[in-house]
Amino acid sequence: MIIAILIVIMYKCENSKWEILGIKDIIRGTVVGLILSTLLNIFEIYIPLTFGMLLLVPITVGLMSLNPKFSCFAYVIPFTYFLGEILETFNLFIPLFHLPYREFIVLIGFLHLVEGIFVIKYGSENAKAAPLFNGQAIVKGTAMKKFWPVPLVIFITSNGTLIPLYTILGYADHTHYDAKEKSRYMGKMVLIYGIFVLIIGWLAFERVLSLGLSLLMLPLGHELIFFINYLPLNSSTKIKKFQ
Picture (cartoon, rainbow, N blue to C red):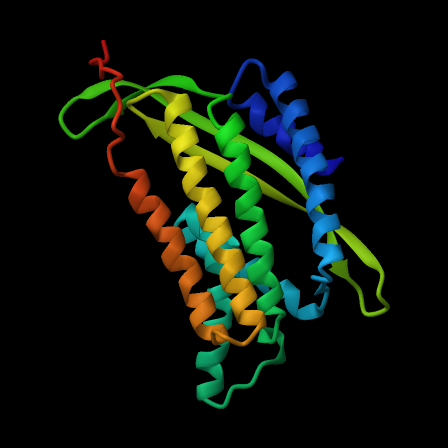
């Protein structure tokens, strides 16, 4: 219920059709989350809830204060791992840093896979006109922002009880071109990244890749998505100056 209220508040701030959009995306995210949880349970991918998991909260907040994109687990999980490794080199062994990193890699892959599909299909649904600077002049552009709450029933307690937790997938972008074309293009990039991370996760589980190298590839791949996002699209849509 709290997640549903949060999503509604987010949409109320962004669009006059927030009631319909909010309800639709809550339903979409919930259905996909249940399917994703079932798949992860079938493959026996579980993440134990430990006291050390609380460490991710201040790390996420701290990274987000530097840049909102760093709140993504593709940055948080590798940062946590390498911070723990650095502390251990100084003989500062802290058990809180011993987290199920391989399971997190798989989870990150699946979440980006889902996000990519959502962005392809619904990324431009909440688009609205906005003035943008293209490097030479202020032009007519489009801003997009979407949220999807995804329940995950893969977290377990010490006695084996499954605990449902929510994560919120988000997509924010802007473009000088057609919004649907841009969201589909970037959705495909996120989808490819999700598949890439799942392959990395599988290789990490099979011990083909070291854990450190596997985690390092997550933020590097994510940064590649942002780099691609800044490249101009091959679009026939004309750019109009903002009046």
